[in-house]
Image (cartoon, rainbow, N blue to C red; front, top):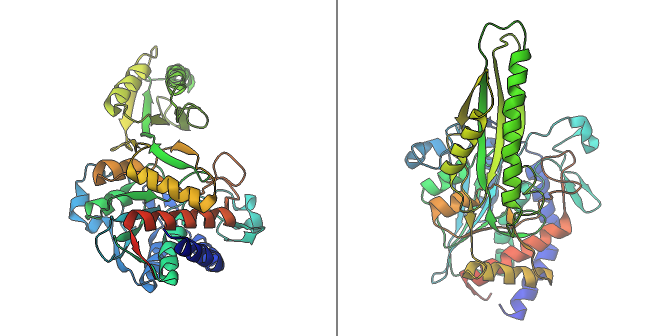
Length: 421
């Protein structure tokens, strides 16, 4: 990339900052909450499709359930219903002779929680305050949708043509271990030579992602019982076995170079919901969530958890109900050409080296396993700090957003190849 083109892109990024912020605000203000087994993504996906059409992309707005290959796809999570939850894919055709690139983001957001805990009492305000955009999804992942659209806008503003094709995709149903939107994109045949999952953490460059998912433990104690005491006592015994497994997993995560530190090595097996008996004192359930390291066997872990809870002393029985599909892990080598390209782009954009890390569960593994593409996560969603995703007053910093925009533009120029204006 010549110094002239680099300067042209940087100037365009600066000039179009207000437009980028406005687009992010508009996206945040359209609620798109994932409410398993359903979700509310339709309105924002229709809006985003129109944004991409105005940019001149060939846009495909489609329902996952209308894709024949999705219906029996091995990556489909059957626990989530995809009716009325469309995907968006827009293609910017290249001039030919270059590598293709997919930019992936997701349209769904987590539940906002108590509105009174949010600034102005509105989780979807999109408010701009002190260089920050607030609102549910501002980081996770409406910012990814905005960034990907702005890449096309900046290339066009600079008059630059890519040699390879650029696909901008927005998937429904990423949260809660969903991934069905991404699976449907792949099932419909969308592919590229590489993919940036613009859904990353704190500006890091995540070369791998954890696998995993959830299961429900159904507890039963012999009847008749006069009250809930036998069920509670059995629950405590099962929980002890589960916590012992968690301690073992923390020890196994500790030496991993990417996942040996918080938040990944803390509670790699988690109890996330409890539903004890109300009228029937013999029955109760609780939900378990867990991580799998890259390369770990899903079947081996399932067997291990089942054996652990089966070891709880009676009276009582525990039945494990697994998600219909776990999220797969993935990993891209540090010396892979795509890794080299993206790390170099970050250094040019930010004038510093990127922090290379791993990500939690995401759609990266689905892209890698079912799309046969190297996939790297990079974005500015905040985690472990004030304004983090999935918490009240989620926000992103505008200067970090625009730094990410520059990184992705520079990567597209290098990876796809380009012709000067």
